[in-house]
Image (cartoon, helix red, strand yellow):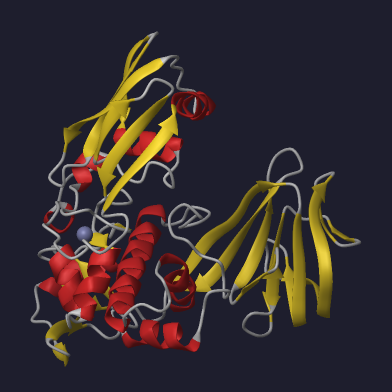
Length: 384
Ligand SMILES: [Zn+2]
């Protein structure tokens, strides 16, 4: 994959082509075909609904066709006695691969998908569903779920390259595992948020990814940084690197999440922590401590009747709820039954600041310039 090929390429002089004001190193055919992503759509479930428009084929874990048909009405998928049931048909297979003959033929839980799906048995009559889809179609689906579709084209192009880079990184890291991405990695609802405009915007940057030191990297992004993006090391405990070490951002001031204040009841915080198997009672304070470059706390200290507890701040934010506690760049005030959190930004703060990217695009910055601002020292490379 890319990381194994790029170091060898970097010795040569890259071909370059002008795209706006920015150079994209064009390696055209470094990959001979568009990468296929394996995306975990559903996990550990007992029931899902499947419909297929038009002709389809079903194969097992081998490639021999075990069934085919012309359209399938909405049918229940379930697992029993070691077999997979679809509607009133039963297949004595541990895995089924369903291929529709045209794009968007497969509808799973009322969402249409371009790719083919695999149903895999798990324990206790449960199953997972994985889609295999080419990365460009996948990014078209992600784009409209991760950024408002009406935003500036260059903000959307920057977001497309960011998501593509992140997806390619995950594919490299997870390699031969069952899937490369799950629903926590990138928001994705098949074709439901695609539009001709978004598909065109994805096409504009087809095959372009960011590399640092000729390696692909996890191109994190978030909604609003609140003034300075954060160092990946202090949020995720990963090795810091120049593209992910944080930059000043004076562009997201207009985001409504730039400054916020919210009141969360202590019992709610305690309940959510308990659900995550963190046990505290009678909290008196929650402090964000050990701030990183962007002043987001890397850890939180929870002072409670049963002692002090420290944990990763981003984990704490996700446990309390990312739609309640917007970021870990907060001050807090004890109000008796509740705690008032006052903070900056929404999200973990690492990498591209989406509201900042939108403001830069509105000021006339092109997508590549936006990416080079938020991910310092990167190169843009077209790999297919
Ligand atoms: Zn920002």
